[in-house]
Length: 408
Image 1 (cartoon, rainbow, N blue to C red):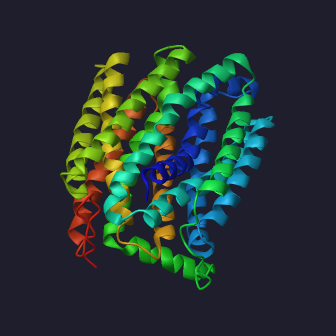
Image 2: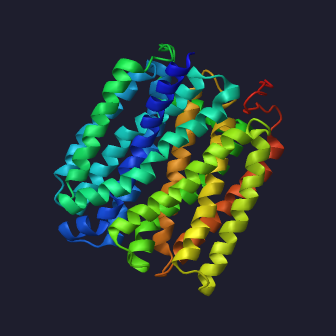
């Protein structure tokens, strides 16, 4: 593979991976504007985010078998078209229930991009390079939290909020064109793959029973919940509590994303010298410590806005380093069922992310306690699953750059 081809593959796969997060980040600054237009509250607007997370979680379970049955590109085309239609539906929404529903279908379409991109990494690149490739995808993905809130703020300041979904529609159309002309089909359709409910469920059960997948996919999902928690509550914390302007929020949101992006690139260097397993072990311990300090400080009123930013930055750094390694180790044991494994991994991430975003609403506090509490809880669960689950992995498949060998 030439460097030019490698670059374009990463760019397209990264764009596919970033579509769903971009769909979230761009409309965050418009929460109160949309709420006022729809005659509801910003807190109720979080339902549009929860429905999006639920849609992505459910949709990935749908696309996994389709990707293994029909190849990677045909289900991807369907998903992108559904995303475009649902985004237009969001544009014309006149009530909160309609917007919640349209966001759900937008997520169902957008998750095809996420699942296909993750699966094609496993198809197109050697297992030993997967952690490095996932880190590069995060670099492209990192454009979302840096550009999307700023773009969303600019759109709301100059146009009606509906223009946000018009822009998302245009982005999806451009991605569709890039996929159609420049992304190769990486997997031959398998007509023997059954789409009947019982074989599909059996296949998913076989995937989740793989100890390596269960350990790293579940722990990785709870690690990633820290990012979802931050995204779901960031506008409420910085705009609602600390009273910063929408423009300033875009800069804060983008600045904090540097921790996530930068850490993922540090991981690209780390995997040259250390195994993914060792990297994730250390970063999860750090994540538990940082989130515990954040929770303690929130309970005792230690942190103002600066302290809160420092704590969130630390959490995002840990997530940025851990996530590529968790993803690589989760998918490493699979070849034939890579689509289903990728879908199940993504579904776990989104389901737990939706649970985390909902958990924020259950903590009756106007400060940073809901964010800190959910981050701390998810990090502790990730720690327990990781260190208990590793005891059941008998035939580990390595996923470290330069030293990956399949043990079975």
